[in-house]
Length: 476
Image (cartoon, rainbow, N blue to C red):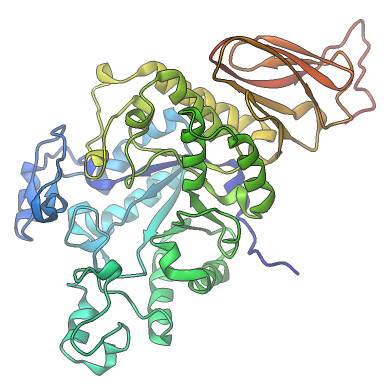
């Protein structure tokens, strides 16, 4: 029996870039000051670009705007292409009061602060013309207190009251927050409503949805939404925000794999000595691992640079993000070294002055994106742990000459021999590091490695033909 819905074919080849629209770029040559009216007439406050957001009393920082919009994202398409990503994920874009838009007022209106429906249609057209997919954020667990249907329900309109959960003197809000009333997801009318929202934007041409608060939706609502997405097209992608061990959430195409983030970071900070075993177990038990997002930071976490300020450790984490099964997701600005603490500092504005970029880090990202898009084993190869620490694993591909071995040595220089679980890898075969050109050799089904202190690499078989002799002539 097949439990999983089919994973869209393009997902295996994808690197995603997450954008928080208000903080990425202001389009049409404008500044936030020139757009002042869009914010102030709705009780928002504006701030100059590059001023670091700060937490304010009464959560008022959610009402501070910098002016980024969908027009601006479309205008930066050349930057995204140069980086090499081929999908973007946008945090919510629908009409809402806050800068983060997780308090929806109307799902059928793209917020005018982001340019409205014309800006979304333009962005879809531009990204598709450049072979880039677009994923929107679906916030269906709850709405904002100003949601058009909730306001009617609050006034006692029986037509809409059962779409929410009302008690004798109050209603249910997300984590008890009165400003975020929860939808009564089991109600037929709510399911029909969500389905109409899904189809509206799929009809416009988006390529997938990310579901907010996936654990609050629960397994059956996740399954229901994915069924509706796949009913529309098996090539549409659905990922759910789940902050747990990823196995078992196979009713969606994948989850935001924060478990991967915690495992990798704790390993690099010497807090988890068994990360390799954990990564193997997770791979073995997570049937939709290739659709899960390999996260290192996001709009809900500290920036990677703040968590791992040691450059070697940070690059090591990024290496694992791009070589472990799943879809790498880059949070905007992390590729140039953008810093930021807890929300709202992690939602600072994108830096467009390239003289302030970490260009070495940017080029490192470009290299890893290139390798992932061009090495079959990194896209769909299995994961086989060869050593826990130093961490060494194989991405095993159906074609023997595509095999990849990844190593990460956090410690002093060491020599290690690892058994290779592939009887097609012949004696004397050379593995060459795609990052450094260092060369290692297979002897009797084992790989002999001399690893420099604090080093990492991506090794691939290099076939050598000696005087017209190819020892792999009958091995594939």
